[in-house]
Image (cartoon, rainbow over all chains, first blue to last red; front, side, top):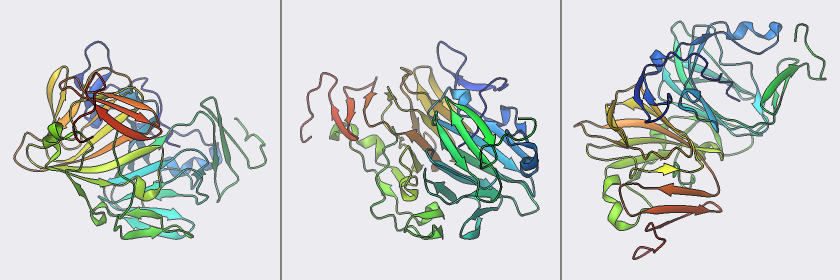
Length: 179
Length: 179
């Protein structure tokens, strides 16, 4: 799942606006304020996202069926903990830099201009990490299911989404402290 | 709707393969054979797509919930006839070149690195045209509804999709010759 926040404060300078609303038709993503390192993961699992900056683009256009993030990864940062989803398809396109895709098969370099895809229900966790020394910029697209389960093969974490609200627990359902 | 064909003959040199199948996990889009100018439009409306080359990426990864095309527009070519959808969200990201977005509001230049979004049901037709002298390359993402209606404000065309099968007629439902 692409955890794109709603466009609360996009500060988006729209290039073109639709006739009758504040929803833009097109925009320059650089005009959207990024969210730095924000994640709903319980505290033990947050560090991996510290160098991650996400610009939520789909919500700005009022898209509801899939989310689109333009995400920048500083050296060492990852898109997410390694995971797979039961119901949501995902797609990633590398815009700049060289990223590393981690799956059950190991690590694969993804150069700028290459892409990756993760169909719903394929039980092979994925994450994209910046193992280099310069920033990586990528687009993440993920469909949005109201009900979803996320699996994290490397850590004691499970995500359940009901009516669109995500909840993270340990694999046996125990809540984490502070959740 | 993003009319991405199924991956019949992708000729995709996979960079990473999933364990147990021929579905790649990542790839270089340039290894996918493009479809040149193919469109299901009735003959009178096909010319606009003649300089268009589409690489269907989502299907190669077995994604079913949204389609992803990497599309190249030669000077003069367009992504589609100007249209809007009742049920499917669309998103476009310009990778290279300068494109022109056409909506009810008129024409807007979209530079490389900018994006556009079209929520399902917004009754404002859109198309992206290359009015320049060098190629435009873009990503198109569109959700996939089994049942859909497409509206074409500038021409006598209507699209209906039932059980995933598209059918184009004139606005009053009359089939076009040869359809």
